[in-house]
Amino acid sequence: MTRVRSAALPLLAVLTVLCAAPVALVAQGGSAPRGVAYVAIQAVLQRTPGYAQAESTWTAEVAGYQRQMTELQARLDSASAAFEQQSVMLSPSNRAVERKKLEDQAGVMQQQVADLRQKASERQRELLDPIEQRVVAVIESLRVEGNYAVVFDVSSQGSNIVTADPALDLTKKAIDRLAPSAGSSGND
Image (cartoon, rainbow, N blue to C red; front, side, top):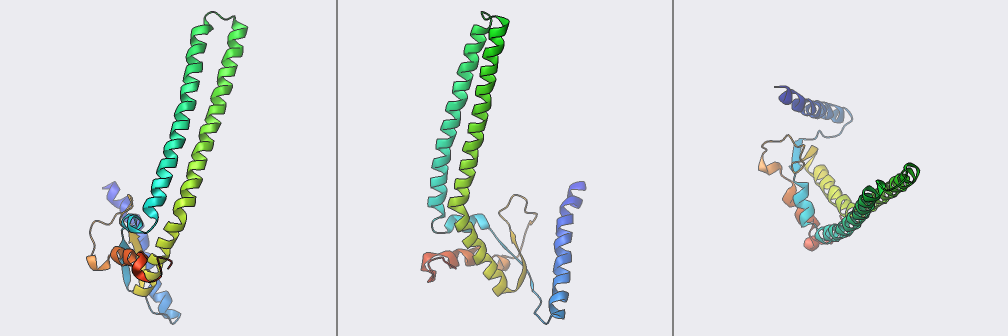
């Protein structure tokens, strides 16, 4: 019961906006949006020219970053195992010095892993952002042309849409508009 209420709150907010938007637009002399539509953005992205190549490039680069992180972890694990073996034979002061070296090495490794993750994230944005922006621009143009107040993404995990009229699905229109044969080579 609580889940239904919490899921209904965002829907209630959207409905409030949908009810208020027509009144505000008509008061300004504009035409009121006629309703809502939806799109499966993941389906559109997967069919957008250049997306598969960009995603493949990013996936390959991430695999390289993962290998580097695995190597860093293996080196730290090896150094830690060596310390554990030698620690019983070390004096307390030497043990403290070696432990400090190991902690410093772990700190350096953590920073390198953070740097690799940052590089992966930046590279993902570099490769995929332009394509995603183009898709969003096409969906926005479809929203305006169709006079929709809101377009929902039904492919997102947080989507609370259970069922909808297929006539409101803009997915195929967006895919068609992004296709190279659409006349503008997908540069809408």
